[in-house]
Length: 144
Image 1 (cartoon, rainbow, N blue to C red):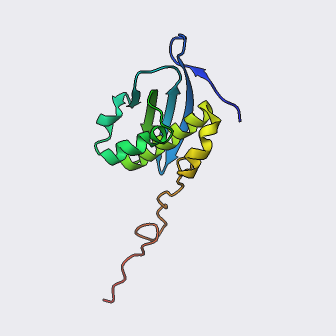
Image 2: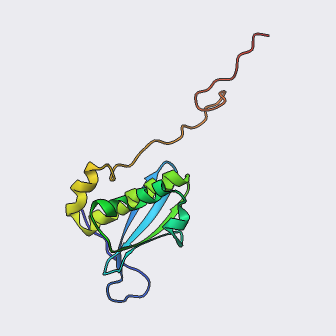
Image 3: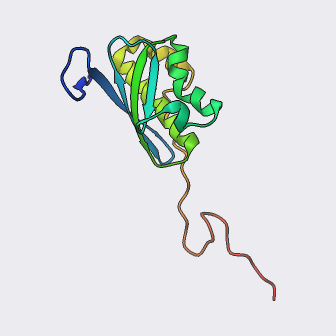
């Protein structure tokens, strides 16, 4: 596995990041995990703080679970997420963060894999078939 290290913006010292993609249903999250020393954990999603982007504590916990399981306090993450609902977006972000953390340190793979953070949930809505109301629901039968 090759590790891609890209430079973000102006090439200053310690401004490199690891980029990964996470998907869930129709949500796609592009995650950039910046390397370097940071004072505290900072996650920005679509240029908003993740506490403002996700309203419930459950969704916030889903996003920062990879960091809490690895006991990481200082990190900086920038996320671009499109599509899906808020729950699918949170899980897509979690998958992207987990993949970026593995690029940073492959030793963390076992801990993240055991918790299921590296598993892409492939369930998607089935397409509507012709002659039916939805994917599998037939038209209602009338006797008269």
